[in-house]
Image (cartoon, rainbow, N blue to C red; front, side, top):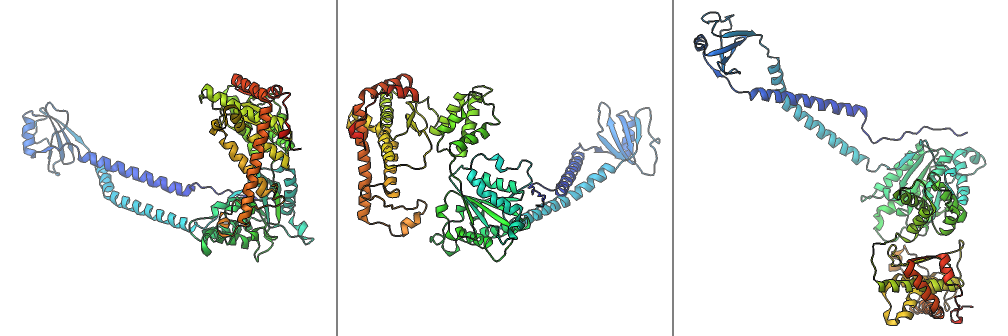
Length: 624
């Protein structure tokens, strides 16, 4: 049985003790400030005219005074017609009263007790205020210096976030699809939950598991599910968080991270985007003191150093396995490699059900049809479609998500939002309609092309119009014939412009089509060995290794490079010839689809098939 641990999340807030000290200091400053204001107000009161006591008695008997207030030996005198004292005087402290010489009928005499508490406290406050202010300034300066010192001392500490005490833990049940990856990772869960079972037969717990797959396929979610299934702590950090401008900081953070993990073992360390620090060494960038290389060296030592039996498994995720250092991938470091690919149709349906589970979905919505149309989409793409569908429904003030909302969200994610505000002239609309109809006819006629899903002349994303092809089923492999049909389909728009308006009237609307066609043709020749003269030969160069292309010698000669260029040109020319033959053989269909686009702006798959029914496949376009 596995022992269940309690994990405490470190809070970034202030402790109650420190907060109480700060509150007390603030209250003290407020009191002192109040005393200062009180003293200042006392000092700013109007000054009283001081007169001798004999003069005061004389003037009082003459009826010039309204009232005399006696406080100890001090006298405050209010003149006739005034409401505030304006004269002051002093009497002999030994004389108790003013009966002698004073006519009581002429002036009212009031005796009050002398109170000096306010003045005393004000005096004390005024005297202490500078001392306290200077002390407070020194205190906060020392605290600030201490904080900076603590920050400097913690500069090399790991910034990994610790998970493990969440109420809703992620498990394999919460993740749809990726069944093969779950099976591979289930073994890791067994290692973490029952390590002694494997150690008893001499099996070693794997040091690392590398999750490899395209972006958005759920690598991070699977790593958290492993921790949730095994019920162990989960330290999460990004590869970029190790690297700083100061040499040695990354290595220090690696040491601190593994030290924390060993204290919480068995546990999982998850390094997202490990290619940020795990790239191949010896590239010559940064020299021998390159911070990234030192960080990688420390990771290598921690994963397979002298210390054994720590029960710490490192999970790492990347979509660039080809650039990782070989020492990182050898047995003893990352013993397991789990490939997480794009979901197939069954997995896509399961993922869509998960993301729509908490959304009010109308019963008429067909998620199975949506999963069929989303071939090549990742889990993140499907989550985005579900969220966009909810946004569309909310924008229309609907309480349920209907089929139109789902379709609009899918098209928005796949080909971009509609730009209905863009105004095109009638001539531009006609040209766009011919262009998109050219794509559609070539793709419809050629036998190994995908099905036409939708044709529109409404600008979407960065395009003036879209002809959308969707494969009828998921494909893992493509043949030369399929690629050649795709090339011809890509050039269908430019060729339609050429046939209708003449070769010198073609526009820039086909710019992205030509770029994609050139990239596909070069991919066929260079990376897939699909050329005529260079059949079964590849000349692949890693895209990420820019320095290798600059430093190392090219792996093929100039003559071979010329042949590659000729092969690419031949494929493009052949595709243009086939597209031209299809369009000229179906001019009536081209015009019919153009008219329908000008009238409706968007034509769906069923109507496209009906308009293009009976299209002719010319011999010049056939590859058989």
